[in-house]
Image (cartoon, rainbow over all chains, first blue to last red; front, side, top):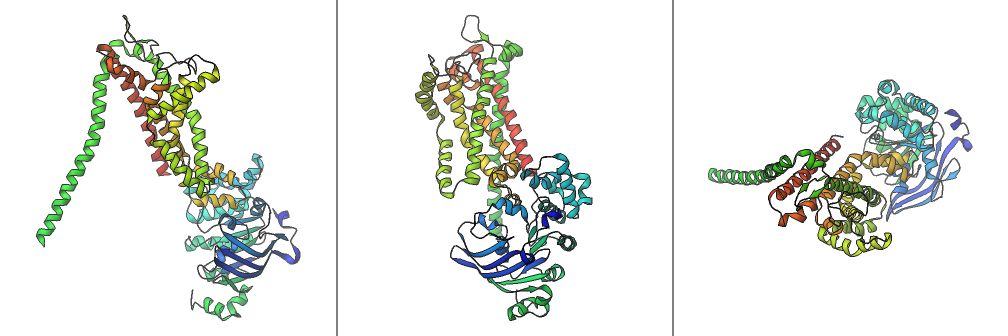
Length: 261
Length: 293
């Protein structure tokens, strides 16, 4: 899997966002966002509900394409390819930039078929190769031991935390470079949350992770960089340690010290 | 104060009994039909002999030496229903996929009410259009002396079952959670792959319910097929054969029948009823399975 990540983009930035604006109809939802996301790091997007962080993350794999009457301006470079209003192959982009959602969403099929779905979609038919991909993905998502004896039973029978790790395994099975996580633990109990956080920290060796979270402690625990969004503005972006200890903006300080949010 | 309370209880009690009676009446109707059909339908089967009745290939109810074999009707009903499903299912299924997942809101707003309208058209109108358009069309297309027959009936039935297949399939497809679609797209699958590999499999119990519902409608339809099937009691050897369905066999002779002939018609109704019961049983099973999942 690692040869996929070998050719890093210039200066180690996998995403370069500059002067990015987004409108839903007349609503100007994101204002002039500038942000570099470095390879093999975890970048946390924090901020109160409705601040635009989930909207923003969906532009990194073009999932915002699904929402009608969206207007975009500016630039997001992924691996030096323009994503904004460009004519790229979104299937290929989404294969490289995987996504894990807030609510675990395994397909109503067997555990094996869930993981094999992505590779099959991208043309892998060889049984041995599929078996290997499934096993490796489940191992990488730290769920293999729990499901190895029931690969053919329905994924819907797993617990919420297991389902979420299965979804991470499913995303890993197409051998992405980036994993976008949109509040992946907000529907989970603390123990499952801990497992996902631990997993995220392991995964950054091979992948780049961008995670949206409501939980500031989570951002502090696992991320290398933190971006604070407020009402569609990127208020502050920098190393997590600095954001949480010496924030430059008064609003960031107020938010992380719990004065609003 | 207490009196007012008492009054409420009284109205509730009255309402309870009214609804109970209404509910029981429904069950009563079904039971009555069942019992009556059994009583009225059994004698002829016994007199003719169950084997001769069900598997006899000749129906000559008014001959000097009458014969009551209903295999032609049974086979016609089965062939006609299968034919209607073979044509109607893909048509209805793909329409449903299109309407539920691909059509723009405007297109959907035009087509969906039309599908509803299709369901509301009386069957005699279908038969009428079939007689005026379909039958002459088949006659001209295949160079036959008469266009009415099994094929015409199949096509009319296929169109008649479309609305139920489309409506039930749409409901089933739309009930599939949006998260499945998002999950699939996020893995790099395109829209068509997502629909056919995730959404449709997730909706399969509802879609099979649509099929069974269509089967039920097709096998129970009488008027429209009577007008286009030619209505002769032949074995359905070819698509152009003039044939009689179980339903039309009952309908076409009932008005002038008597004696054993009349009893045999009741027996045909009983056989039809048995078919419908089995189909409904399957339908209920599928729907229950869908809810469980």
